[in-house]
Length: 302
Image (cartoon, rainbow, N blue to C red; front, top):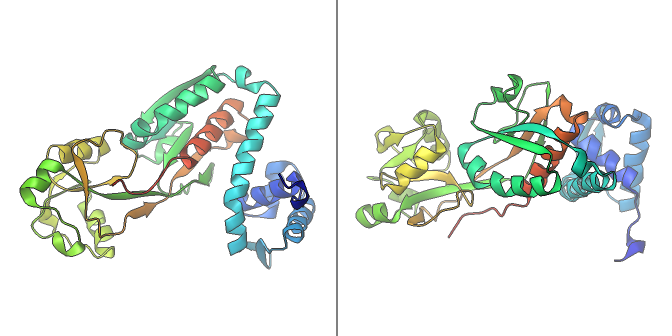
């Protein structure tokens, strides 16, 4: 490692990360138990050490620059690593105990959580995990769950939210459906094909229209708000559906269609209560989810 190339210290990095995640110097100061002038000096020192501008200052507001966004992804990884190091160094891995409830969509819960929970349990065996497969944002505000994995940013003021890696979704159909109905490749090939979607077909039609894919409402022959139901209906040959890429483990007998259409990109957010700042068990699970989900390979399946 080129130690001489490292011209900043961790306090500066932590100040930048807290400011970026909390949205302002004052909020970051409260989160870190510091003062706004101190954090301002640390962020400025980091900018000077790196020779870049991380925030544009407009009155009392801060707007992150392109260089700031580029650095943020690397700094988040440093923050996750620092949290892990602190936990291991203080022996908290063995001491953290209790139940933590995670809510996620059905496909994310079944496709991604088992491996993450397995690793978490090996590091913190006292943790008990309960999974609620649901898309309801109100799960957290009603205290039905401690941590939520969501695809939109929660707007409830009492929640802490963190955006992770973007995932993609593509169009899929069973091999049997393709053999019987043909393989659509472009947006112009959708006429005459049957689709499977959520019960709110108006929202889905609007999203697809924005992508240049014009589908008549009566082409949605099967609808459900359950990701698993849509997956199994597609497997049964009932039509084409949009599913997140690389989430469901069994892809046998399923093929990607409309390959000339760009995949749909969507964010993944972690949200939890303010208790994250004081509960070691929730912080442990939150950090494990952040690391595990950020490391998932994304992009369409072949």
